[in-house]
Length: 155
Length: 155
Image (cartoon, rainbow over all chains, first blue to last red; front, side, top):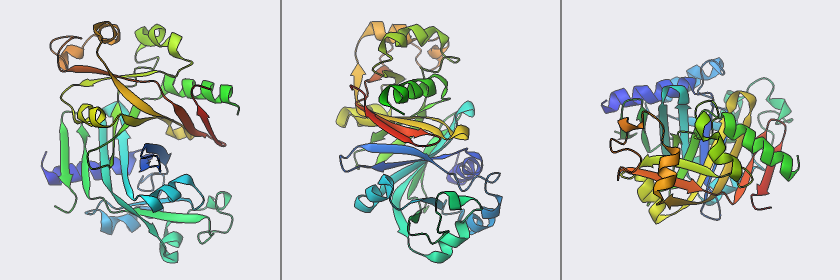
């Protein structure tokens, strides 16, 4: 599997993975993982497919979360994260690593917003407790069922 | 959800999670996640249910992997890991954190061994490339669909 094939494999997995597993490093230097909404899942978020399309080469990831959450505190102190996508029944997995950024742009918050999220963020997309995280991964690695792959995303 | 309820919730999730997501810290101090066989999955590994039963209070985890793998190198240098179990469609997730150990005990390797693993370890359970990792977690945290929980495992 060459880098182009591996990139397509990773994109295909991001399209269908039921969740995205985000790992941050805590103040105790230990890893902390939790499932996040996979906004690249095409069935779950069909309206976002076009938003991601121009950034597919970069494998761009967005997360939406509570500003008050532990993970936001953690990434403020240490932006090193990884995100894992998986179809366990097929033994397909891909990990993307890099430094996550906190996006302070109302347009991005509004463009990601989905009906029903008022339940989590009563003030809407620009509720102060609504934070968007963005990861433009630096590297990818994973397993495609028959072997492993690894590439720099900028390659 | 009190600690006993949370512990039962975590055990229930370990029983059914299709994979266990193991995160290690690399020499670059970044997190690395990959899916591992969830040997506590009762449907997939019915013969191991009895092996784990006496260790349910401790939420004990075993992994089996290649000695030559990157993760074994990583945990030798830094044993801090977390393991995540998940049913994404139910928004159920649990993370167990602690220091992982490399188990150098032929009996444990043999008791975990499953038919067919010769494909990965041609020499059988005591193939030098077969390593067993054990995590007796120090703490647990997660989300049970309606709220979060957190507890010290020794409590």
